[in-house]
Each structure stands twice: as C-alpha cells, then as structure tokens.
Length: 276
Ligand code: PXL
Image (cartoon, rainbow, N blue to C red; front, top):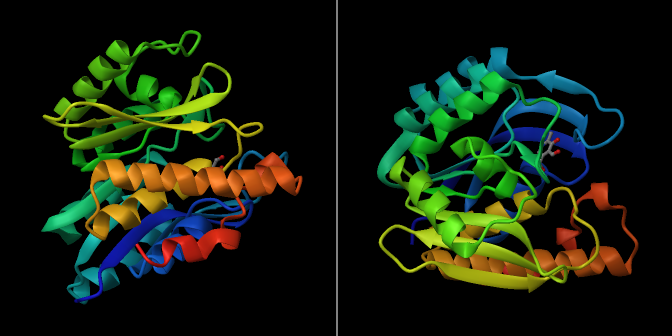
C-alpha cells in the first residue's frame, strides 16, 4: 500500500509538548509521513510566564511555493495554532492548492480554553477562524472554541446534549462532516467527548478525569484522530482511541508529578499507536 503524507500546518514549540512537536511523532508512529509547515517558532508555549515567539507568516508563502513547484499532493492536511490572521488566508490557499478529492482536512481551532481565549487571539483572528472551519472535514473544538466559532455565550460552560447537538448541527452546516467537542467536564469525575457526524446519531466517548487540565492534550487527541481516520478507522473509533491514549498519558504524568504545562508524556506509550 502506498504510504500516505500529511501536511501539518502548526507552530514549532521547543518546550511544552504541543503542536508539531506532538503531531509529527504521533503521525509518524501511525506510519504516515509527516510534512511540517511552521506557522511560528516558540521557545515554550504561551501558557508559560515567558516565551520567545517568532511569527513565521512572512516566510510561509515562499516555503509553500516550493511544494507547489514540485506538484506535491497531500492525503491529509491538519492545522492547529495559528499566529496571525494572514496565516488563515495562507492555510485556505494551501488547502485549495494541495487537497485531492479524497484528502482529509482536519482543523483544530486552537483558540482558548475554559471560556478564555489565548493571549495571541484577537477578535479579527476569531472571525478568520470562522472562515477556515468551512474547509474542514473534521473539526476538534473544545467548548470554548465551539462557542467562539458560533458566537454563543460560554456562560458557565454547561450545555445539555440537546444543546450540543444543535451547536454541532449548525457548525456542520458550514462544512465539517465530523465534529468532536473535546474535554467537556461531566459530573466532576468524568470528561465527555461529544461526537457528531452528518446524518448519523451522535455518540459519546467518556473518560475519567485524572488531575487538572494539561496543556497539549488537544494536540495529542487531534493527531491520534487524524492518524486513525487516515488509516481507515471510523470517526468514532478514532476518537475513542485518541481519548484512551490521552488518558493513559495523563495518568503517567500525574503518577510522576509532571507539571501540567509540560504537556503529555506521550513518548511513554508510542508503541500503542504503531499497530493502528
Ligand atoms: O496546545 C495548544 C497550543 C499550541 N501552540 C501554542 C500554544 C498552545 C496553547 O497554549 O501556546 C504556541
């Protein structure tokens, strides 16, 4: 079987286990070739008190042009943290240029958490993100991101499954076929992942909450989903594997007292991903 290639349009962050530093090894473990397209270079992610941030926007067009000249095609394209609104236009152009009929486009709208947007996220960026989601086959928002994209007040962050269904339906009308709303707190002790696929009954993957929220969890989950789905698994099985894998990594971090902003120690369980 011909090996698949996935373009990862995301930041390169040195310390903190997020974005490309998480996605590339996970995608590679799942036997898919990872091709990285940097959006920014950071020393640590933005949840640290201090970080070096080098916006790569001015270089991206020339970087990507070489792939156009080489007539490259990608079986998958995944996007994550975007550092400027111009980058969204670059990403849209990338998708239009490199998508084949059967390519999978996964957009993780990395914008914020717990009802709060990340420091680098402006109003304009939020509007741009709404444009980008139209190009997604798969989208993996948390509740904060889902509310922001749909202009719904986050309030106390509590939504019924009927409300979640309506929100996902609205989002899917804009383009995405598969949606998973990740990391929804459920009865204090559990975390719900709400799965919506067009014309199918919604499904839920529940995992136990282990410790506090950890940065980079979303990046681990979206990469496992991307890899599983590209390897031919159903969307539900992809989400289940991703949630179970992330839980196992989080358990290890808790047992070994790894600080929450150091990301998930996914290196410990890479072999779990090698046979899927
Ligand atoms: O994990 C999401 C993420 C990715 N990239 C950067 C971030 C964050 C979250 O804070 O700061 C640079």
